[in-house]
Amino acid sequence: MCAILSRRAANLAARPDAIGKRRGRSGARGEIWAYGLRNPWRFSFDRETGDLWIADVGQNDFEEIDFQPAASTGGENYGWKVMEGTHCYSPQSGCDQGGKVLPVYEYSHASGCSRAAWLWTITS
Ligand SMILES: [Ca+2]
Image (cartoon, rainbow, N blue to C red):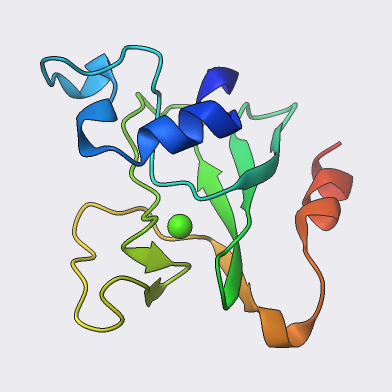
């Protein structure tokens, strides 16, 4: 499951045809668990619940914390690069938010440094 979070996997995941076999699409790469992460800089499993917390670095304006429950069967689309956090990125307005998993937390670059270290601290 961790392979999806590698930079290579994240880049592959940007391709629409890279959705894992769990989504039942022919020609999909089986090692792709989820997609739509831009730069999952840090992630951690909750030791008690098995849930997955992902710190995803944004492009221009927003950083985000994403969540995947332990019961997930995979195939989540975390939105990049149609969305940056809960905001449209490309296009800048009127983007299709359908089927995308929005972050559980986001913050603007205007508010300070990355929360990835914070995520690591609370889940370690
Ligand atoms: Ca996202």
